[in-house]
Structure formats: structure tokens, C-alpha cells
View 1 (cartoon, rainbow, N blue to C red):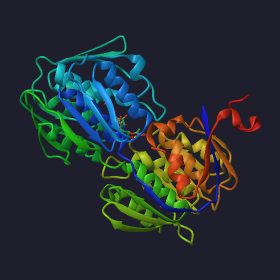
View 2: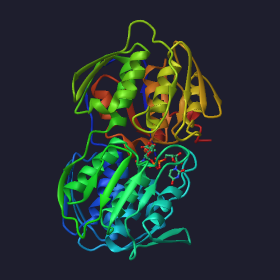
View 3: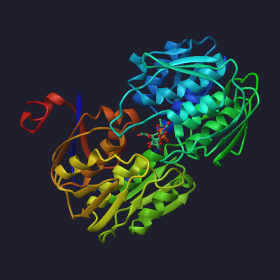
Length: 434
Ligand code: EPU
């Protein structure tokens, strides 16, 4: 396993190009199962989760080719309905294979993915949606079996305790496009990744109205065809670098992003008095302020609210923003795995239920810390960039799931960081070496 060694305190200057979105590319790859014709996806990020989804599609029988660095061609002429536990357990997003398999083959058998460190992640709303479409559902030996031969369009409500469900909306939508009749999905997720999926499905011949709103109206068609579709830029990657810029940039420009997707983050950063210039709809420049930032309160919500996937990174910023900030996590109320690690770097954070009460300091100090999930890992990298001394982030394979070349991109703008085999980390610093 590799570790990341970061020397803190170096200003970031230059520009970072934003890659395609992981959470848009994953359902888009699953959607290629809806047609026997080739689908070409462009702007696909180079991530372990994406390669993994490619492996699952290949296992299911699709031809999967990476024709260029960021272009994938998938031809799912013949596909099998069963995705086994050995594959699915490695990536939770594989649940979004259920909808397209049931839509196209009228049956599917996909393993339940198992636990997740960011908290309980049930799929009851996905199943409620499938049941609403009239599918037979059977859970046996850890597999969800769907029988969709008598499925029909219906009125489906996808609201839950924490808002809608992103992957659940994708799943029901992908089943509905090939289900006879009219399906109305109410309280559909409005995340940009769902909007992107709707546009891809329309390019394939699906009939969908209400795109971008919480009410999607889908009229089932008999067949979908192939498409060429460009995945939208990753708003969470862009948001992570915007926060990095607020913490450490002399002048950092983010390119190939979509500024329109960052309203909640830009609003909070401006409230904290971060200097942000919107250069164009695809480009932003951020600078670390010369005076201390102001503390702010942040509450995560489904889109267009502040994204849960930026909560950990924002907590790193607020840990070095003098004053009291409160971060409330409404989407995954237990998503605070980064907090004990930030505390090891000197952050003053108390967890009270879904709230992190952060007493911001002027500095953190480098320490060996353990990454626990993707966004927690990013939060630790950001903290390491501004900490005094050296930070070692262990278990960085989590980062590779969702950040395309984070080391190369940050080094190119001045960060001093290196990925090393764990064996090169001083033994006395490695909590795993004992
Ligand atoms: N929920 C239920 N029942 C369900 C589904 C969800 O109670 O059937 C709850 C969840 O437990 C959670 C809330 O509803 O409290 C929202 O969950 P959602 O289903 O929207 O999350 P997801 O689709 O599993 C996607 C992203 C996550 C991101 C969330 C929220 C992908 C592959 N994953 O997950 O991304 O945090 O939406 O925006 O799109 C990440 O990229 O690091 C990541 C975790």
C-alpha cells in the first residue's frame, strides 16, 4: 500500500484542469447496458472506481474498450443479468446496475454491496421504486433479484428522511426508460449527475421530461440506441481544489469546470471572505486571503444545497479559520471519520450528533493520519498542505477511487507531496507497522 508524504506550507500557484465526474460516469457506464449498440463516453476520469465498473461490465458480457485516455467505448450486445458479490462488494455504486439490467433483460440479480464507513447506506428507496414499477423483488443469499416482465409505468415517490436518493433515482430512471407506460418519479434527486444521466438517456432515444426538476416524467420506449456522450466535469473535484485554494493559494485557477454547479460552495467561501473570481462559466480563480478568514456555519443538503461530498474538506478549511464554525451533516449524519484524524493534527473539533463544532486555529501540525474514505482522504491532504511540518496520509487507495491524479495536479501548482510505498515511511511514525 502507498502513503502520501506532504510537506506543508507551500503556496499553490498555477492552474488545475478538472476531470470528468466520477459520480456521473459511473451511472453513465451502467446505462450503456440499456442498448445492444455501442456507446462512446468522453471525458471519463481515470479512477479506480471507473476501471472497476469497466471490469463489472466486461464480466456481464459487454465489450469494454478504452479508445483514448478519457474515452471509453462499451458495446453491450449480449449481457448476463447477474453481478456477483466478489465484484459488487468493492464498489457500492454497482447497485446502479440493477435498474438498467432489469430494464433491458427484464430480470437482474445483483449482490448487495455491504457496509460503508460513511454510515448506513440502505437501498430501501431503490427497492420501493422497483416495486412501484411492478417488479417482483426477492432478496436471497445477499442478492437482490428483480423480475420485471410485468413491469409498468407508475407514480413513484423517492423522498426519504435525508432527502431524495441519487443512485436510487438513477436506478429507477434507467429501469423506467424501457418500461412500458408513463412513470412519474416524484422527489427525484436533482444532482447535476442525474441531469447528465437524463441527457445521456435522451441521446439514446429515451423520452424524459422535467430534467433537472424533482419531478421526472418518463414514457417507456421499446428500445434505446447507442450514443456519443461527454461526461460533465467533476464538481466535487473542483470544489475540493477551490477549498485547497482558499487554504493555500497565492493564485489558483481551476479550468474545465462548471461554475454553475458550485453555487452553494462559492456562497459559503465568499461568506468566509475568500477571494473568488469567476473568469468564465468554466473557469474560477481563488486566492488565500491575506487576512484571516471568517468562521461560517455549513449545513449539507441534497443539491442545490451544500454537498455532503465537500463537508470533510470544508471542515479542514474551518479548522484553520480562527473562530467558531458549526458543520451540520444532514445527508449522512455519521460522516465524520475525518475528525479524529484532523484532531491528531491539532484541530479542535467536537462532534455532537450530526454537528461538528469547530474552534478554528491559526495552524495545524503535520502528523501521520489514516484515510478512511474518499472525501475524508481529500480533507487530510488539504490539511497536510497547510500544516506545519510533514503529514503522512496512510491508506490513500481511497483517494485513487475518486481523484484523477491528485498528486500530479497538486504538485504541478507547487505542493510538495509524494506517493511512496508504505515501507519507505519511518517505522516509528507508522501506526500500522507495530
Ligand atoms: N438512503 C436511504 N435509502 C435508500 C437510499 C438512500 O435511506 O434507499 C439515504 C442514505 O442513507 C443517505 C441519503 O439517503 O442518508 C442519501 O443517499 P443517496 O442514495 O443519495 O446516496 P448515494 O446515491 O448512495 C451518491 C454519491 C455519494 C454522495 C451521495 C449524496 C455516487 C456513486 N455516490 O450516493 O458520493 O455522497 O450520493 O450526494 O453517486 C462520494 O463520491 O464520495 C460519495 C459517497
